[in-house]
Length: 150
Image 1 (cartoon, one colour):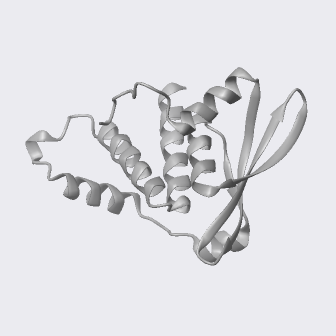
Image 2 (image 1 turned 90 degrees about the horizontal axis):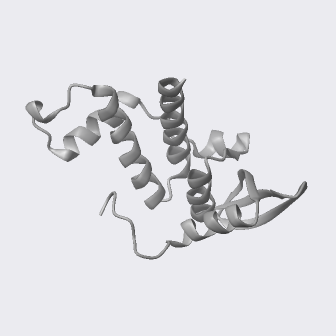
């Protein structure tokens, strides 16, 4: 199903298309609270030099931010209390183990494997609503792609 385009837009793609059509820019997603096992987020939007905030489910906010390449922020308290520190080598190693790849199947360009592995982990983190990990993975993917492009 990966790399398949659905016949109709998915909800987050629809929101992205609405933003583009109405000249709305997502400036940032702000995850501002964790309460009763749920994160709370808001979108900071700009249209025609007017900024406004809209409450959002965190999973929706992160999905839209990923589509628009917008930054995701949170509070220091949330980072201190909820952050998960991950080791990139461990993430890659776990991903490769889960895929049951034989040594001869690993492409020559390991950088691509790493980015692909990180993208897969990013999708899983979003699906699991692990937004801290998703943010770190997204930032690492963006950093690598920026380094490749310029």
